[in-house]
Structure formats: C-alpha cells, structure tokens
Length: 384
Image (cartoon, rainbow, N blue to C red; front, side):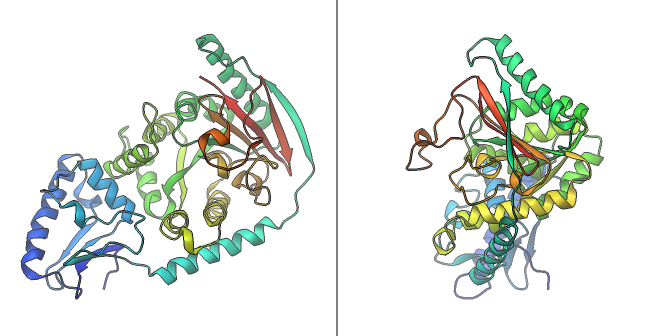
C-alpha cells in the first residue's frame, strides 16, 4: 500500500463517513480543477482518492497543503477551513468527523530530530582555526542611489577578491522579512555567476520534496516557475511578510543566470521550531537545520556556490546569540559570509533576544570580514 505524507480520514475509524466522503471528494476534485486552471500540470498534483477505504491522501507536507489552499484563496464553501490542518498546530487537528494524519508519528519525528541534533553535536566539536580580520569600506547608508550602487559594487568586488583565493562558498544571511537581501541576489546573480558560482542553496525549499522539480525546471526551457514551486514560495513570502522582492523571483533569476538552485530544508527540522518546540532541546531548529544543510552542501556543491539563509544559520566567529553553536558557514570550510539588511538594526529592537549588545549588526561604515578556519564573515551590511 502506498504511504502518502498526509491522509484525511474519519475520526472514529480510518474511513470517512460515506456521505461526507463523496461530498468532500467533489470539493477536492473542484480544488484539483482550480489548480489545473492556475497552471498546475495534472501529473504534479499529488492528491489521491481511495473510494474503497474512503480516505483522501495528499502527498504533501502539511505546510505544502496550506500553501496550495492559500494560493487558491479558497472560500469556506469551496473547502471548509476547519477541515484544514494548520502546519504547526499542537497535536494535529481533529474535527467532529474528520482528522488529518501525518505519515510520521510523534515518536518518529522526535527520534529524527534527536538524531540530527546528535549528528550536529559531533560535527560541532571539531576544532576551529585561528581568526583574522579584513575591512571593507562601504558608503554611508542613505537614500542616494549612487551610494546604493557603490555599496553593491563594493560587496561584489570583495567577493571577487575572496574567491580568487581558497574560498569556495559564499553565505548570504538575511532577516526573512527584509527586502534588500533578496533584491541583491535578484539583481546580481549574473555577477555571481561570473565569479564562478554555479549553485545557489536556499533555506526554505525542502531537498526531498522540491529538488526533483527544481532540477526539472532548470533543465527545461520555460522561464516561469512550475506552479507547485510558485505556490509554495508564494506562501513562504506571505508568512515571512516579503513584499516586492520574493523568494520565487530569486529562483527565476538564478535560472536566467545559469545557476542551479538546491533546497536545504527538511520538514522535521521545521517541526523542531514549531509543533515540537516544547518537546525538544532549546536550539533544536538551529542544530537540525545546520547539520542537514551542511550535509546537502557537501553532497551537492561541485564547484563554487552561494547559500541564502537566515542570519541565525550564517553567522561567523562568535557574532551570534548561540556562541557555542557553529553556523552552517562555520561548518563548511573555505567559505565566506555576509549579512544583509534593509537598515541598521539591533536584535533587541526585533524582539528576538532579551539582551543588548548582540554584535552582528554594524552601525558604522567599516564592515569587518572575519576569518575562522578558512571561513570569512561580515557583520551586518546596512543598506537602503
């Protein structure tokens, strides 16, 4: 029997009550028709009906299901909202006659998270090299477009200089709702390609769920994203409050520049920060993502690469709220790291931490590139 990621079942038994099942089947079929009308190819819609067992299966992670329904902007009449399992709801969702089930039990998810944390702890104990510092002079942050262009040029020139040496990877860290980091990538991926970067790793995309579709897209002739990827990244834009410059735009720009995109995330890692946050160790999301991303980069980077992720995963040399935990950038040898933001920001003002003095963000024109075990890093680059 095929095992799908999520099933919509009955509450008292696996079978949905007969009358309700056929009502739901008609509604879900209408959803499939809407997806096709929005550009989905029928072969990429992973929704299945089992009339014998009276259940409806979705071969998507729960947040992918939410992404599809959000993309269609479904009304309560088209599919009742109380039938939809939100991705991080504690203990799942159970209605009067229906329940969503995820293929992994709580125990299996917790075991997976624990195994990733153990892998991370082992890797994190490896010794670091000595540190050194280089300074990059940036123009003053103001509304002058000439200074904006000059700032971008200086960043690119610094990366070119670093890649002339032993550097193989560039980590670009962001605060997820900020626009400039995405804008910088969209506008300058062609220059990164000229430096020799041929792969772009991205945090939010799932390696297991999205990589085959990404590879098919990059081999094809169409510029437009496949609808499955567009809907999922559109959902990520929404929950991270992205506006003009978006994650999907980065993937499209990467294809135009001839840079392959590879997903870094995994769903169990995301659950360690969401539904299972109170049941795992405090830094489980940092550990699980960092080691999973390290493993993917080690597997998929054949030459020079860039990696785009939240700053909590890309800091360097102690500039972090997690001084005992190595970032992905610090786990990967021969890499550099630069953190970009929309403006001068303090972590305290973001409400992320309860203490002041977090040293990642620069409030001066000189930005330091720091080296640790052949890794280079920069404090926050503040821009328009």
